Length: 130
Image 1 (cartoon, rainbow, N blue to C red):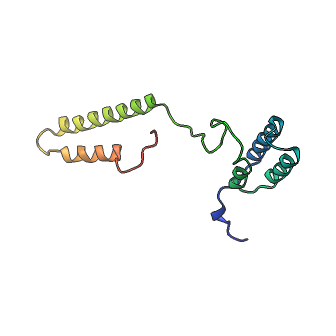
Image 2: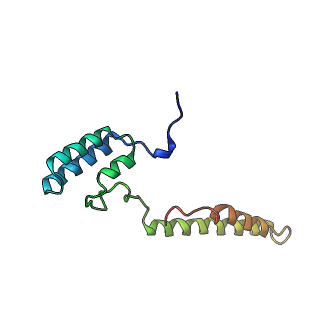
Image 3: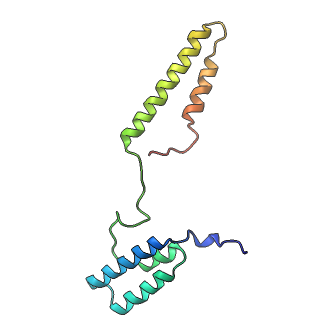
């Protein structure tokens, strides 16, 4: 078995091929493509292996942004991000104050508190919800 060709990109699914074929049919119905060209592109869409091949078939056609597969990105609402940040901060405050209240000034566990803050907030990682 040979190694997959990673330079070509992600393989296309049957649902993506069908969606592209529907877009081509609607473009032919609107008069943007001739029936012959729509048939050729539909045949190429059914034979396409990679997503990039499908995108090239509709590159010159106007497509709604919400229907285009490259543009659809599911993101959590901003309110959920704020709520999650507030919950993390409250957890850290309880953790640090709990350490400080338990040990008092005897052991000065503030360095542990700062390490807990760094561990939970992890500012070096990319943000998921922005």
